[in-house]
Image (cartoon, rainbow over all chains, first blue to last red; front, side, top):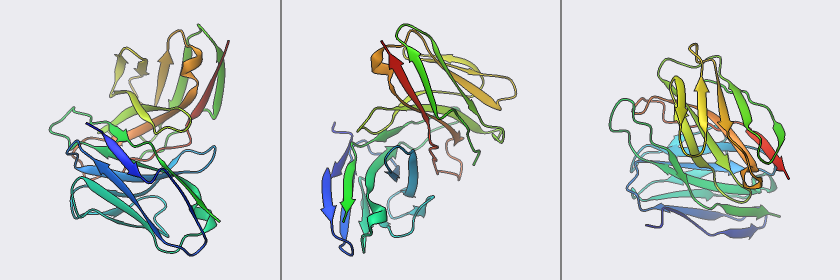
Length: 117
Length: 113
């Protein structure tokens, strides 16, 4: 199993350009998450999904859109990139809890390093 | 969601025991306490989680007092490879409506020879 994979690994954009980051997981997890991490900072939640066809806003959703058309994929879109969106983007997935007292950890991808000039 | 507070940074030496304390005064009855570790240029990885008292695994121990308003991650006999950022999270009971998982700023642990 590959776990959580992210495409691309690196990208440089010019201000105003658009792009889509792809996250894929092969663990049949229900929950998926997008975080951003600025240099020297912690992770901030952008958007998340609790199942196919559903999405919800996190802490810092502005400037991003997401889609979860297939259970295994979670896409993060930047419609008009800004220098403030320069960051490392991490995707994570998590299994649906099957009962009380069961904690299911998040599994993270390797990250996408995005620079907006 | 309960907010967590932990030291920004800590330093220690190889072979020492390191304890990182996290405060979560507003923890709810159904919340779990969870710790993740992040190495540079990698995504975080799960270390340990608990609800109350003490939990131990092959990597660390987690101590949670009866009031659950704080928790302490204990790393026994650290090595240089334990240099990382450690995040304390309060995670809602699985299956609840609150599926958000929020990371704070973490504690940057530096181990010296």
